Image (cartoon, rainbow, N blue to C red; front, side):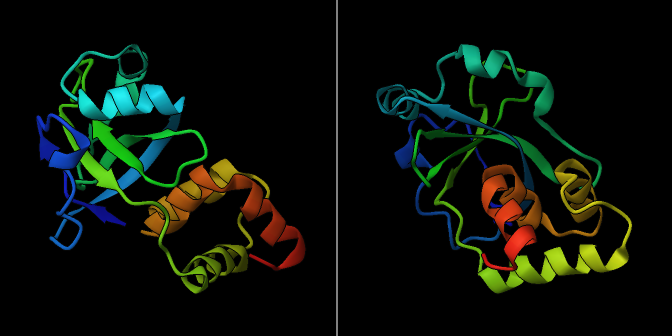
Length: 161
């Protein structure tokens, strides 16, 4: 997946509208779910320092392949959110609007089956599957595993997604 990261955006509204522009590959290192009112406050004040960012600065970086490793911050039970890379700060120095998972199921299934066919890992070892997906450039599957682990396990057991 790709996202257009904006430097020092003030609000979520500053991030919207870039969805059709070319962006950068990203990996969601952790999903941070906030209460609805907390997310609204965060989305209106992206440049404020936040404890949940300060506690996770080590998870956000830009790697040698120019892949953004970031947090997905969203309200509980919401699909949309904000991708952030703080560059070591306690605020969302770089951010991108995340409209939610819009990946075709067929693509996810194809990526899962490609990893399964290697026979290199137990498919319930989601961390290893995620690592293998990252190494193969299956960034959609990496994100899917982060956000939809229960649905992934259901697919492994039943073949239904």
